[in-house]
Image (cartoon, rainbow, N blue to C red; front, side):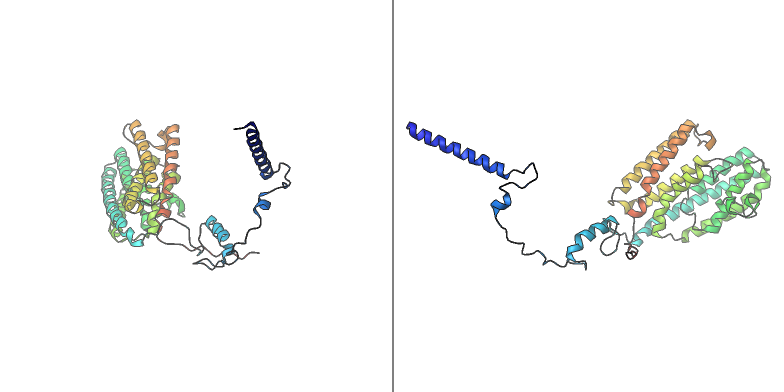
Amino acid sequence: MSRRRKALWLSLAVGILVAAMFVGTALAPSKSGKPARFSVVKLAGNTKPNPLAGRLSKVYGTDIPASRYGTEVADLEDDGTNTAGEQVSELSPIPPGEFDGPEHEYRIYAVRWVSRALAGASALGRALETDQVASARRAWETTWSDYMHLGAVYGLFGELNQKIDGNPGGLPGGTADRNFTGLHRLEMGLWTGESPRSLVADDQKLQADLRALRSLIPTMKITPLEYATRSHEILEDAQRDLLSGMDVPWSRQGVLGTAAGLAATEELFHTLEPLLGGRENTEGEVRTELLMLSRLLATIRSKHRGSYPSLGQLAIYEREQLNGYVAGALSALDQMPGTLETEIHRAPPKLPAG
């Protein structure tokens, strides 16, 4: 190649490089914020308008104008509803009839524990008749714990449940009221120095009320919402009324009652497991939290020679652990009613603006 031709090719290459640098500089954004002398818009020229713009006026399945649909749907989802005013959920409602099996299983369980409580009340009566305070106290703890294993019956047999496990707080005469009967009337007598023989009539009445309850349980009906909610309420009551000592002011057996409440919660959860499978993570979370609480209670019982301590015997760190683990279980159980929803609820109408 001649020297002249080499020089020509070199000049052409330099020209192309300079042109490329010039175009790149023109297309780069201006640091001053002012439009560059050359821009993409200017180089691209005019574009044709979107032929669909303004023509889409309706979205299938709704009366909301297309121009507002996206914004309104986003706002509704923030409120937990859809465009039909229904709760937004990824779960299909469970047919109410699916709860018949769990309820039937629970009724069998409840009858069994009422029968055990009745046997305990009979043993309590024998200890009272022979004036054995220590034996009567142990029999009372067994009877009360057995009754607390029912868990889900409270509120279903209002007056009867009040007679069996009611406290004097709501009675006009308090502890002196003639309607203060049942387990807590016996508790008060046994832990305040009353003669055991003077409590025999109260025990006999308790046995009669337990027999009446046992005959009613097979016919009781619980709505699906009530049944799903009970699993949370049992431990909620234990945290508020038992671990505080409010419901057991004389015996202080709040830990024993909480353990019985956990057993009742585990039974309810067991009956509902077939309905929980595959519905979010509720089943796994509840199982984990209940297992952790169960293990803690077993550890506490082991450290206290195989018996649950009274609230006064519970060490501070044990009380803190127990309250924390109960709170963890409640957090998981709180998901149960929503996970087991049986119907779509329409949102309440919104108030007009202004």
